[in-house]
Length: 488
Image (cartoon, rainbow, N blue to C red; front, side, top):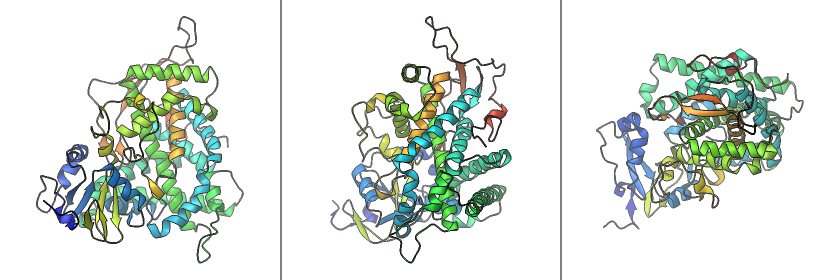
């Protein structure tokens, strides 16, 4: 038996099927979720190899929480954050411990609870306009539709207005290119990542264009210091009295990093969560019907408003359960800033720690029937802070968690108020595993709901019947289309 008081990382069991030179890179690339779940039998820690490097994966919820709470020792780092930093620099979600506290203080006013009703009004308006743009019988590329919705909402909350149509379209395409490349670049050795392949050139072009777009917006805002009552104005005007060396405000470079962080975070992860929620409703019609009943009762013919949020209990539980089954950040990494001990094992400075919300959220000893979509599992109270971690925990917990939850609940409500969703085809839809659990390629069919009449025959909203069984290509579903919700 190992003496845990003197155990080292070498004593932690190595996951099976490691290959010479490659380690576990191939199974991680081929079927990452299957590989992660194959480790669920390890109750505390297991070692995983990526090429010549080794990382310790933490499988225990209490040890995972220890890592989250002690960010002074377990700092943001590792292959995931190395790749994300290529795009967003040292923004709040990727910066080191030494930079984090100051940035958090400067960013916190942008997400103060008093600002949520204003953000919520934007989310509700954008969601209702998006839902109204579809036609009866449409087959939607759900992820694309949710991306356009969250892009518009994010643009208005961040910049108090939408970009020109072409810039919006290009920003959406560039974001998709960048995000889809993260995971493969994370698994690719450094030398190979530099090869000028067509994929690498596309990635570099997208990254440079998106950075230039954000830089131009910031330059325009610096030239016009008027308070636009948006997130960017709050960031520009934020002052941190605790900052040292006179750095009481964010520099232009820091503003660009934070804007890119919130743009990508506010758009991509919320869109994916909404797409998965709609997929789960389409494949669980009983829950969808109950949500429609709740929505009809709460709205009672009124326009959707943030004031409705406290009454949308089932919608909130649907989002909570969606984040359990499909946490966007399905895997996270940390780097040790100093020698330390975790679970009786001595770990060296510079070691990489891997955490997986996906693994914890689907462990059968932590959740009853963990693979089943059951929003009512949350009826008895709030999720446990150790076993439910879609937003992380501790000082590095996602600063925009309430921002994202508000947007997702309101958007979900706006959609089910108008539409019945059904799957397309009989084959189960599988995640496209990237840095997030992507829902790319998910199609759902829409049917106009019949509500409001005593006999249930009145249409909720008039809509032309679509004669096409293909995904909708209406101009209003594209960034900057004619249904732009922003009043210029």
